Image 1 (cartoon, rainbow, N blue to C red):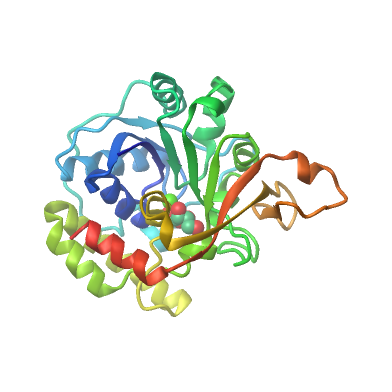
Image 2: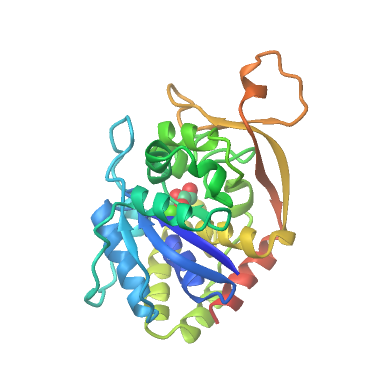
Length: 312
Ligand code: BDR
Ligand code: CA
């Protein structure tokens, strides 16, 4: 089983992924850590608590970054996820409370308590991971792996022509996290754009998940309308679930190794820059950044079916 901390900004597709993290028998969910991104951080925390409650699970929720490390915050994309992050559907009351500890402290404590065992799965802007590195740089050697939904190697961006949203929302944090030298896998738009969660998948999920299924289905409807109107896709990309799919069914993905960083200024701000291993670039900086793994290909249909099957 995989002990994970799930760092998230729920968010409709985050909610789907959180449901997988709560339900999959091979995941041991140690905690949810929250960040601003799709919504402000208080709303993200509220939604994380609610989703765990609806699944009948008592999972620690630790609140984290309210803004990027360095730059000003971009306004949350209410037209994609709704003002409440869950498609503006009516939500039940939340009973639980967040941890007293901050998200970065929770990450450091949890990783250090089980050296070599914990995987960090981050599916929002990565400020909490950057802050955790600042608190204790030694976690780079004690974490099992870091899996990040974000970036784009060949696919282009979804916020600017070159930048994916999670990278764009905190490029300075992303640059630190991607070059920190820990075992890292990037699950970006190259694969998430190949996966489409359709209405028929959602019918199965709604039927399988009780009260949680109602929230997943209600928020899906709002998110799907955005995809239809702006992207002409019938269904929606389950970006954040792909990070968990990579962890649990890696055989559905193809990957490459190389050096990775993020542009932190100018028109390319938030663009992931990938130099495949072994290419002798003249600028030495590239070969000095640590090697990471990036996803390049996927059996998208199989991943979407895996999501629906996990939640049916
Ligand atoms: C990422 O951006 C967010 O809006 C989604 O939740 C996902 O994490 C996709 O670019
Ligand atoms: Ca997200």
